[in-house]
Structure formats: structure tokens, C-alpha cells
Amino acid sequence: MKVDRAMTKKRPGAALLAIVLIGFLVLSLISSVVVTIARNTLRVGAWQTEQIEKTRLDYLARTTAQAVTEQLTADPEVFGILNRTGIVSETKQITDGNFSASIDITIKGDDQRASVVAKASSEKGGSAIVRTTINLTVTPRTFTWSAGN
Amino acid sequence: MERWKLKRTGAIFVEVIVSILLFTVGILALTGTLFYGVKMVTESRQETIKEQEYKNSVENEILGIIQGSDPSPAGTSIGSDQIIINSRQLPFTLYRYKQEGKEGTEMYLIKRGNTP
Image 1 (cartoon, chains in turn blue, cyan):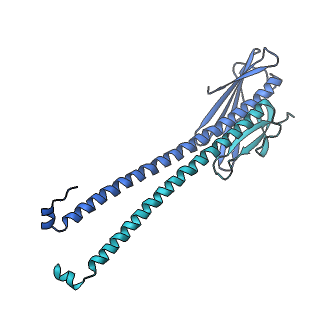
Image 2: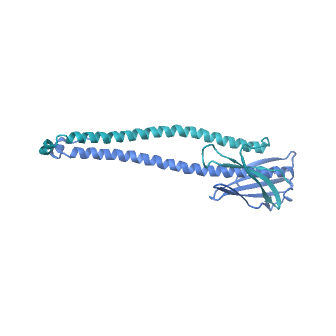
Image 3: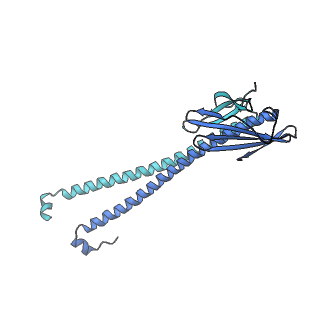
């Protein structure tokens, strides 16, 4: 910034005022950059926590579906005669420390195939659904995985 | 003004010293922030690698359970229980996994138990 010499001669504090203003501007810019970085870091932290919760529920649903599928593959009528209305499990609550989730299983099917839907829901409102479809017409029995409804 | 300066000849020198001190403190703070930022970036790289390794190990455990090739999962067993489906029992064991030294990274896997 060009400082008018005549003006500074007349008003001895004018140059200092300009320096203070520039300093203030520079510090404001640095502060805004720091605040933006901090805000983004917090946002990333919140996103990571959410992702961990999702993964946790997904793993729980996947292994639950696997456990039920194993049983059904060995004996398709182990939980009763398969029907299209669906066999629904009692809700299982799983708690460990701060973590708490509930598991619900629905089994549907006929003599051709069976489908297992495992749903893991947390108290925070998140949920994960995993489905397996067992082909009962082939030996050994095979099954396919899918996520969601 | 001149009279004041003559009376207190060291005033400007003190002002300069104070301003240098303030400037030094500011520069040191900025340098500290810079080093802290660089350190954070380096640590986050290591942290990402560790997190990925942990996630891979849990995924491998799931794969082991699905393939039936993993008779005893590496996680901590936190008890056996059962799910009731149509009045019939599905026994299971719950396993907990945790990334070393990091809270809130617990993962849980279910492994089917033996049917009574």
C-alpha cells in the first residue's frame, strides 16, 4: 500500500494506522483459514463415526445371515416349513459397552428356494439389511448374497 | 512531543523491543502451527493405513466364517446366546474385534454355534 508522505507528515499516526489495518487483515485471513480447517476436520470426524456404525451393523447382519443360511442349507425345514408369508424371529438384543443393536431375521421360501433377510439396527437409528437366497434345487445347495431389501 | 522524548530518551528503544517481542511470539506461533499441521498429516497417513489393515483383518474373519475355514475366530468371544426363530433355537457366539489403541472401532461378528 502506498502511503502519502505529505499526509503522514501532517498526521504522524497515519502510517501506523495503515500498518495496523494491514496486520489486522492478514491475521483475519489466517484465522478464517484455521477455522475452516478445524470445521472440516470436525466434519470428517463425524462422517467417520457414522461410517464405523454402518460397517459395524453391516458385519453383524452379514454374519447373522450366514449363521441362519448355514442352518437352512443343512436342513431347509429346521425353522419350520418354508412359506411365502415368512417366518419371523424374535428380536435379539445385543449389548456390549456403549454398543447396542437389535437383530431381526425373516425367512421366506418354498420348495425351490429360501431367502433369509437379516436386519441389524442400532439405537442411534442406523440399520443394515443383508439378504441371502438359497437355491434348494441343486446339490450341494448354493446361495447368493445381496444387500438391502 | 520533542520535550517528552528528551525527558524519556529510552522510550522508543523500549517500544521497538516490545514490538520485536510481539512479532517473535507471533512468528513462533505460526511456525508451531505449521509443524503441528505437518505432523498431523504424517500421522493421519499412518492412521489410515492402520485402519485399512484392521478393516481388512475383520473382512478376512468374515470370509473365514463364510467359508467355514476358520474354526476359531481371532476376536474376543463375549459370550454365547441364541436367536429364537419360530420357537426353535439358533445358537451363536458373539466375537468382538477392536483396532489396537483406538476407542470406538469395535466390530462384532456372529458365528453359529452347535445346535442342541
